Amino acid sequence: MVETLRNIIINAPVEKVFAYLDDPIRLLEWMTNMKEIKNVSGSGVGSHFRWVYEMIRKRFEGEATVVDHIPNKKIVIQLKGDISGSLSLIFGPHDGGTMVTSIYKYSVPIQVGGKAAEKLVMTLNEKEMDLDIASIKVKLDD
Image (cartoon, rainbow, N blue to C red):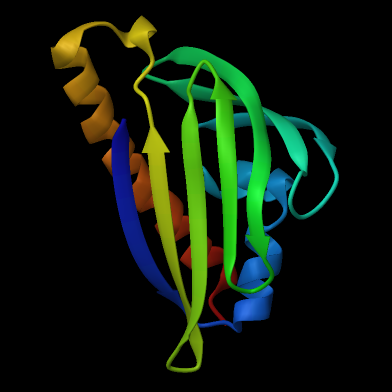
């Protein structure tokens, strides 16, 4: 299991940032390789959706379930399918804005093949995560 952590400070109130990131459809706006979000149901703990993600020109599909949800504090999404793992988003006030900590934990899919390919995927995913978190800031900064 690979774990990647990023922090970003957004010049917007925590309520605004949380509301934006709490909407699964918005993943399409800020996650570089997220291609589809569908069958969204529920809200808070137990909410569920299906996803399609592209990694090194391969398509991966699965489902996601929110397993922890504390308004304006934390969202934890469990991922199952071709890629398994979790995405945790932790929110806190910071100098009039919001600090968001994102933690991705995932298993590199076997389909990518071999240790060299796994290392390449991890490097690419790190760069994509930097783009993703920067995209959130661009969309939400007041």
